[in-house]
Image (tube, rainbow, N blue to C red):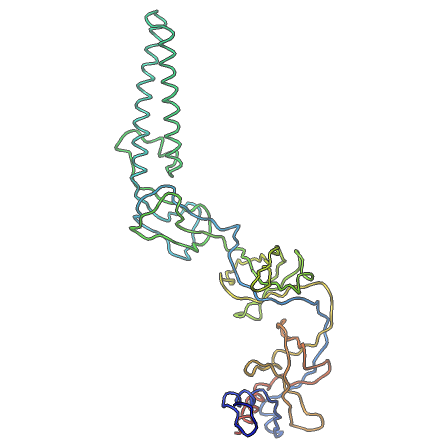
Length: 373
């Protein structure tokens, strides 16, 4: 069994043990000069304590606009692709609809009946004035005319609800003006982030076709653990850092903390709204959220160049006291980088000396020492 006396450790375990063990690197004065080694002291800086949680970039749901079909039919043409930038009124798709044509024919038929009723009403009014028709006949004709007026108004409203413009309805004079195709327009400016139709597809009235969203602002959604609930409040300042651009950060404030706790992860969702006019924050991107909780503490920081990564460990190289050209590898626990410095949570104290320039060279030499080279 692995780990029993007299039994060799598995090769993977041995490799891990070699990676984890700290080593010493000795260099000649010439090698030190050639490597360009420079020494700096770890410093103590005031820092506002905070909570660091992973986050995901999502669209601002309040700026998502769903584009639905107002009429059922067959999709003839789709004019936009995913990610296309559109403006209010941009054509998105063309739909062929027999339902739309039928509604127009019904409207024309009702309007013709109304015109006939109107002429009958005028004749009856003249006959009543001459004494050739009774008031009762006039009232009956008037009631029928009013009913047809209501039906025509309802048919016109239906055409508007099916997507025809008021100008198109007004120009509808006969069967030759009836259209069976309607163009779906973008109701807002933004990017197309969802498209669920293709040419030839049969769709129903009310079916979602596209989603257009304004990405000038986005939401960062993070998971806040129970132990941090009491420290984070709506309005707490947040700094967002991107793995793809570690030197750049975006700031915002906590806008919402979900009152519900996920029973599986024991976390609650926390939301931050941040500007995204440059488009650097892409939907689905993972980021780091540093939420400031208000209290101030002293932390140890070193220049970024001093920290090297070996496997899943972070290390620095410390000059051996009283031994020129000798450096000791020391494991440290680091926090999220801030500008040109990295906070050291464990492994160094203010005043300790570390190698900055040349630490990469020492890492390579340490790797050679581990491998027995």
